[in-house]
Image (cartoon, rainbow, N blue to C red):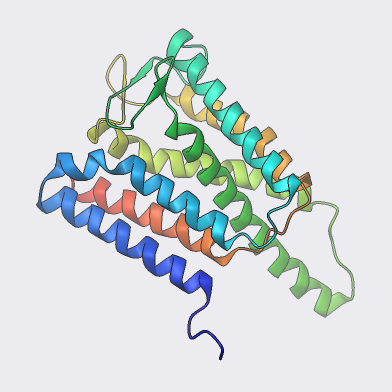
Length: 230
């Protein structure tokens, strides 16, 4: 007997439900309770991404560890020296910290880099297949450059959408006038480039419909809160 729903559909439905509850809870009910649940939500989304990843081999594990550790290291350097991202500090709503940085932030780096990489890779493969069907050739030479640069650009865009909401939710706070500086986005781009390079060259399956859906769901989550939060 075949399953009625695919795992991508199940994962997407769960993600939509969790984020919808979060939006409604933050806007209309006990904001603090739902903010405190952020780390649990991120862990849940991480679990769904791992579940929907078809090929969980050594390359996928290396990619995850690289993003988790390098992202966490960059944040620790940023919080303690100001040399990366700028002058900022984390609040107490994201759980256990290492040298001032919540451990869950390493997971968040993975979620963003993985979803951006998968999304750009999916778009490129569709474009390449379309060109191939018309010309009989596959322009693969620029694929790596596009995945890395376009993926990093998408990651920076995601951070730009998220920043004002994250500050209002007390995830972190910026010094000075309280707004994220341009330097933050330049650092995001610079750090995302090598991480997406690892993503592209690591040999694991990069077709995950849920990752694309999750990126869109999270963008909509932050856009709605950015629009309607006081």
